[in-house]
Length: 332
Image 1 (cartoon, rainbow, N blue to C red):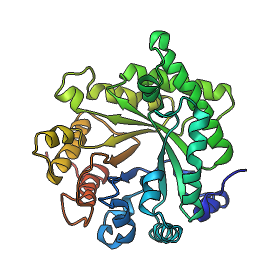
Image 2: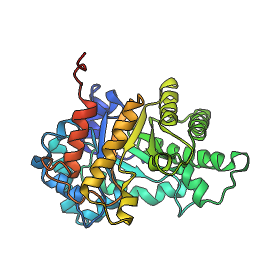
Image 3: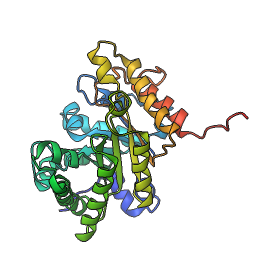
């Protein structure tokens, strides 16, 4: 049985100018820390007045379904939260698994998660996008599939096709993208994977990816001399544009974990690292179709208010004003 997408998803079936249908993916997405103890999601949902200036620029709030359900274990509270998101006009993107460390099957991974998705949708959650969390990397790291002759790439593509086919059938109005890590996977590997996955989807008559998202651990090539650089990230972006696939890039404080190990990390560290990536990639001509600010490092500790420059929303607002809004012409 095909799942409903809640009130806004139903509207998308009827209204041709609905945001998700016309725009594909939003220009700007935010995903605050998912730690239950930080309660970042709850703060943003329950205190929208404290990020009122940022809010009009946010095309989606990015969640893990598990994190969201953990923060709202009561069905009534979850419904209230989803109603609040509807009122402020912020739709939902869910980060999901297609292949994970706990399964070698795209089908099993799919069925293990739909209960969490459906609970959010039943509560009125306006779920418009799913972002698959690194199926290629999970194939290489956890499925014990040899890299010889790209068998790990083939396995990841085959199982991702199975997962996507089930999503397309049962959640037909949800858009689906893939997240992969760079430079853990090289630019050439990622480009080959994109093309292979799209070809396999086409061969099975399944609509291809709606976006491709790059998770760049930029400290690996800035400080650790691991092969890869900003030009390679731009190469991935250019390839996506060439084949008509929207390119999404995650901006985050890749420098934060090392600073935390050294005992020097705080909310300013997160802000500086996230903005450093933005400045560096912008300098190299990076202009992705979608900008995503996401944090999975337990920082910043402060989510609100946006008037605090080192809170999550404060940093996101500064990012928007510096990199997404139209900039004045430089002085001659």
